[in-house]
Image (cartoon, rainbow, N blue to C red):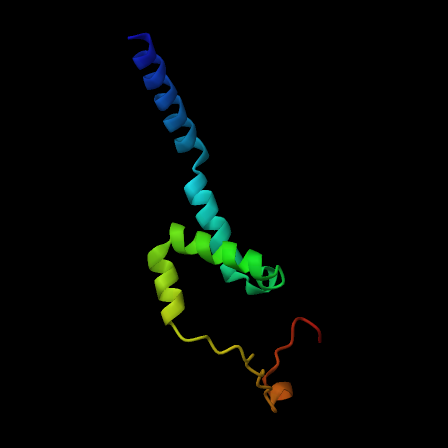
Length: 96
């Protein structure tokens, strides 16, 4: 009877600690950050890439599936358009 009580108390305590620490969510957040900011995990090498991808697939399978099946975003930066008549459109900011 005593071993049942000890086992139940240990299970309750470990469940409480896992609920407070949330290692599953922390691992998923870490993997999502690594995938989102591609530069850091690409430089880490093949082992780091494998760990990040594995953790991300395990913790967020639907998000991983969506990321794998969407085409890469266009990375070109738009060129700012300059107004050739900017002098005519500027306002006087109190300087007269």
